[in-house]
Image 1 (tube, rainbow over the protein chains, first blue to last red):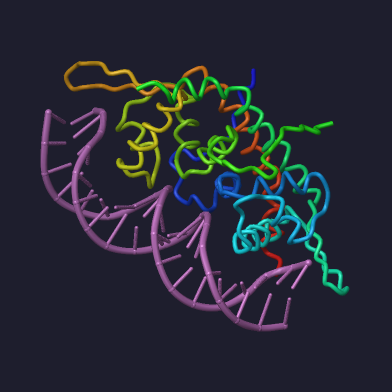
Image 2 (cartoon, chains in turn brown, purple, green, cyan; image 1 turned 180 degrees about the horizontal axis):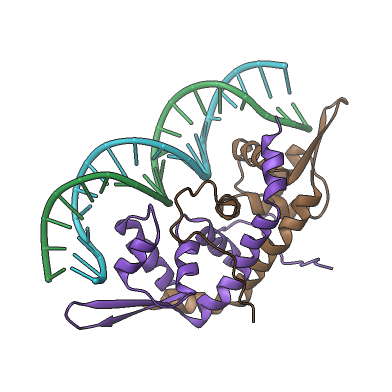
Length: 122
Length: 122
DNA sequence: CCGTATCCTAAGTGATACTG
DNA sequence: CAGTATCACTTAGGATACGG
């Protein structure tokens, strides 16, 4: 079983046109999954997110949030209050996206020892 | 359901130490998943793989194969024949890895229209 | 509080040519 | 057939400072 036969680009010409490729590369960037995972716990403001992730610069936070918003995975709602407040939250699409992503993360955890053993080999 | 609570790095300090991060980045690189998907159909030689994927240079093929082998996802067996033959094939770990990866690819295909719609928005 | 602008470095990728 | 070496280019990512 689990012979999921999704037609991954064999002899593909345009890698940008492959829907899977853009998704996979988003997963591979440094902060997207981290941010999505945090937003899975609720909505957060910009600085809250910044403080929640060690090593994350505001520059990359902005860029990542914009990218996730552009893909429709998160929403950005501005509350014109004083001080200003901007809430980031997962969309339905973002929540559904998190499922296969977390499955992959779970695989990583489950096979961590296998990976470490393989990498330790010369 | 689907409340997979894998503890993704909140306030994580060392991203390299996170087992999920290295896996996600491997998924995000340009050729790993493509090669793994091809090897899912059987074992292949170096040039066979090279010819199977349009746009893939031998340089990147080598590098990707070495990385996948180092992670224990594929095996490399040398047949000292004339001409020389090297077979690349999925390991058991590689096959199990492909499951969550393909699930992610399937998500991408299923939500392709959502993504395109979101990206089309200004 | 919520960003943007600028500059810089490191890493990923590709073209091309060469080797056992 | 199965690679490696070199170079050049592009992009991701971080430091720092400034703006609404």
